[in-house]
Image (cartoon, rainbow, N blue to C red):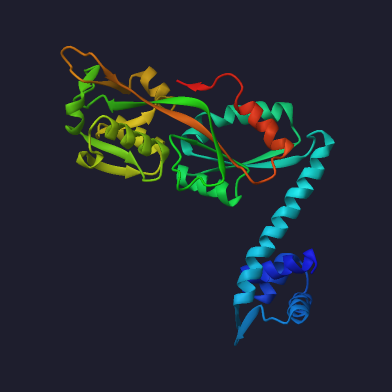
Length: 311
């Protein structure tokens, strides 16, 4: 079994079409057919059902698709490790990041890394926290960065370490009833509409976990809107609709300009004795069983350098 045969097979399995697979590989359709036929004859199995002009994977084909991808991924990882023997002059790193980290903290770190290693390419994907965790588990990302806590059910085989911390604060716009106040009581938290991130985002998870810790059922909140980006939430709240719980790193400029105001939550507004605070850790994720490349180690060193706190 040759690596090129596996690449041809995976292309056909992806496109479920011999001609399109050939086009994607820049080889002829007869060459693709011959490669698949050789595999089938060598091992005495059928990899595809031929149904008229269409093809479908057989059980053997589905098994080979999974294992072939593992083999080629390992070959690529090995090749990358060999390329890194040139003192980090060339190579690449795939990073997955949740929105808050990716938009407000990570760019500075990537810039610092590129100054030290200009020949290394960084491919960064921004998604919500659950997608980053699952992508790191599956090998889609070499490293993952999220905020908040990582559910144990999603993080099997992952190394999880805190590399920083962000403060989550409640903010309102100028036309909101709370704008003229510095603090509210915990009991008042259900007196306003809320603008929330989608389920699966680190910020929403941390806010709801904090509420539960304070004895407030998150389901009692009036949720006016659910939006997929913090930028959209900022704009809506600035427009006077509801309140939101957002990382302070996201709203720093708006707080300085006065278009948003941070509101503290206390146990008693007349004689405050306790301020309820929300902090969310910045979490670095790495697969425990995958080879840790020199590029990955170098990037991790940059991530944990000073300026850890996102406040």
